Amino acid sequence: MKKNYIFLALGILGALGNFFGNISQKNSIIISGLFLIGMCAIASFELARKNSKKNILSVLGVGSILFILEALGAQTGIIYGDFIYHEYIPLQLFGTPLAMLGIWGFLVYEWYQLFFRQKINNALLVIILTAIGIVSFDLVIDPGAAHLGLWYWVEKGPWFGIPISNFIGWFIMSSIGGSLLLYLYKKNIFIINHTEPHAMVVSFISLGFWTSYHFLHGIPSLGILGTVISLVIIILMKKEPLK
Image (cartoon, rainbow, N blue to C red; front, side):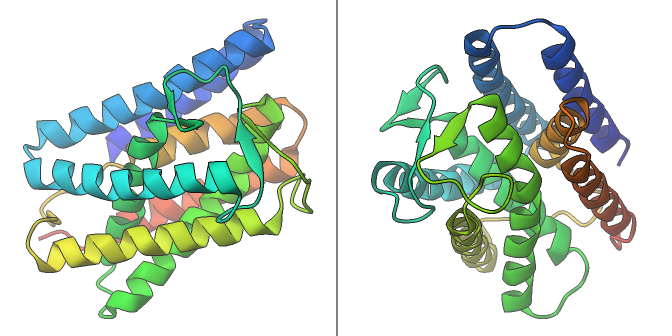
């Protein structure tokens, strides 16, 4: 559990560096893109440290499928609505940052485990809660990323400029990811270790960064929302029954 506080602190430090570093928008977008890659690298190292080869394959498999859907959405506007990733974000394929493969894979992995470990005896409910959790996470992330310029929407929406279709898309994507993890779990490919708390690397670093970003840029309502979501995750993780 203590590691998750470190991940949260890393995100906060990243936001402070972005705010006080007097960085141009172009460099800020490039650095943010590299920041996404760094998050995935830390999360991968954490999995590798636990010798979770099956789970690494699960994350890669789920992330790859969701990345293809993400790229499809970016090219066609079918899943989320019309949006465009900024060209300055490094390492893109089909107009989509390759880091999104890891981001999606780890987000689903982290949130699915969070609710699975609450001993909810209903597989469908775990998937639904996973999707709701990730959408709540995106309520904080998406406005900040659009404000920073990582991507922009062709048509603005009611949630700090973000269209409702985006959150519907995130719910669909998260539900697909949760369903894939359930399938892999039943096939004994995805393993949940109940002997120690799991690390929510991508979620906590992201929440630390964007929650702080909103406070620093005068959007306190989203900063408060990010704080509440972080506290809910911490409370749920403290309730995890460990064997």
